[in-house]
Each structure stands twice: as structure tokens, then as C-alpha cells.
Amino acid sequence: MNGVRIRMAGLRAPLTRAGLVGTAVALVLLTGCGTTHLTPVPDDMPPRAGAPVPAIDLDAPGRTAIQLHDWAKERRESTGIPVLALEAYGYAAAAMARSKPECGIGWTTLAGIASVESQHGSHAGSSIADDGTVSPPIRGLALDGSPGRARILDASSTDANPVYVRAMGPFQFIPETWKRWGVDANGDGKIDPDNIDDAALTAARYLCAMGGDLTAAPGWQQALLTYNQSTSYMNTVRYRAAAYSVGRTV
Image (cartoon, rainbow, N blue to C red):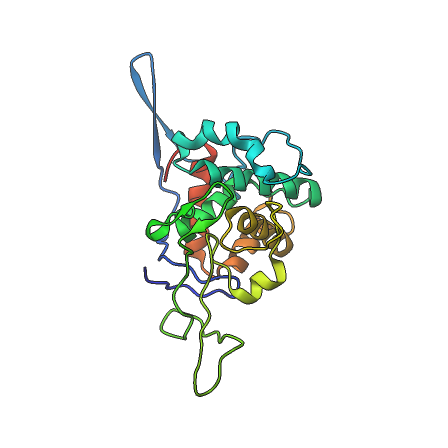
């Protein structure tokens, strides 16, 4: 994949070129009484939060997100999102609702980002294990200053031997940003960018810090444009999140 966008805040460098998605109507097929009906994807800004996440014990030991298994399983077929990924997005939204309720981030926004960044942890044949670990690990292109890419040197780099960083994991974090914002979300004692639970909650924390109130258009747009300095990227995430909010695939 071609990695054509540049991160303003050094958060990540995407794996794919996200084409500009406008407000053209996308359609869902719903059947009833023998008649086919077409439901448009909402054009709300910000995208809707989607199906409410049921109450769970956020302080339970181990991988707390597993409590959302039934909720995620109900939405797997309609959205096309893997159950383990949906659990991670729902848990991150629930955790932020408790720790930073004024943010109001929805699981759909996280799903929209992860869809663009790594196809929900499935890019290039990767998959999510039961503990949330994505393997093989997903790495972006070297940020070597090539056209369309930032130039970010690794701390081990020297003039004679430059080493360029690569974005990491299902949410494509730059190592420096992960070092600052990374969090252990699944209770295994590790802060792992290749774990979808850790990555989803870290992304939620970062977005809330950058945008403030994500239930209003200005805050949501600011958060997304900090995550990636690209209007086309923001529009694509918005569209996909809106599609997920009404239970359809993208």
C-alpha cells in the first residue's frame, strides 16, 4: 500500500490512500413484506455514536472487553467488523465515558479509523488473537521523507546510518506518540501497539485530548485532523463511522 498522507502531530502514517468520500448516499438493503427498501448512510457531522454499549464492569480483571462479546457478535454480520475488534472499540468508548465523559467519543469513530488504517487488524493477512494481539504485526512504510511521507528518524539513527520510523499496529501509531499516550487496556501488564484493545483505548484518549468535545462538529473535526492532517482522510473516517452507526458494511 502506498502511504501518501502525513501526520501533523506525529501520531501515525497510514497504510492506504483514503479517497475523498463526499456526502453521496450509500445504500443498505433491508427487506420486509417482500419489498426492498434503501436506507441512506447519515451525513451527520460528527458521525452518530451507533448502538449503545451495554454497561460492563470496567474494573474486572483480565481482558474486560470480552464482556461485550454478545453485543459485538450481534453487530458482526451487519458491519463486517470482527467481534474482537468491536469489543475493543466498545470497551474504549465505555472507558472514556467514565474517565472523560465530556468527550463523548463513540465506538463508531474508532471503528472508522481502524477500518482505514488496517482493515480492523486484518491488513496483509493479519488477524486478531483472543487476547487482542494482532499478528503478524502491522507496520507502515518507512517515514523517510519520500513524496507524501513525513521524515522521522528513529532515536538510534546516525548520519552514517539513518533509521526511519514506521507506524505501528492496527491504529498506526508513530513510536514517539505511542510512548507518550500508550495504555494497557486488556490487563496483561503490557502497553502494546499491536494489541487492538491497547491501541483502541490509546486512540480514544488521544482523540479526546486533541478535540475535547467530540459530540460537536468542531471538536470531532479537530481531533481527526490532528490524527491525520487530511480532509479526505477525515471525510472517509466520517463516512465509514456513519455507515457503521446504522449497521452496514463499508
